[in-house]
Length: 160
Image (cartoon, rainbow, N blue to C red; front, side):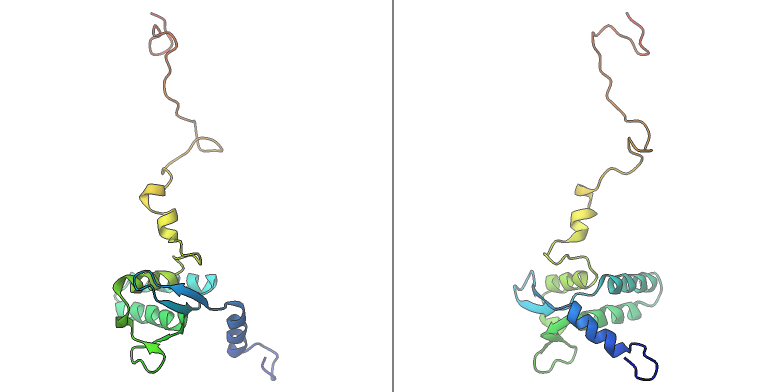
């Protein structure tokens, strides 16, 4: 904390976050190599998504790319990720494309700690619930199939 005013410094937050948000061992899906990554916090992912959406929907693609690159660099604990790799660092081009895509999704919070792809699990067509009003709690009437009991009833309930 700052001795002058008693307010926490950026370094105080960084130190606290590193103790709470410890690195995870992650096996990359294509290469099978294990890396040590620090997952962004839920708040960090939210802020990243806000910025990504703002930049994606504009002409500022290079800013979007830089934001994603910075997020990836920050996530890598060991080995470090660098465009000019030194000792104990790797270049993004050394990763297979499938691993690169996985890492971008991981940093954006789309991969759960157990490896579950959250988009696949909750939002793809095969698992998506029907869209539109549903029966029950304020959702309207349930649509039930017509059932004929004797075969002699006409539509509207009139008998033959």
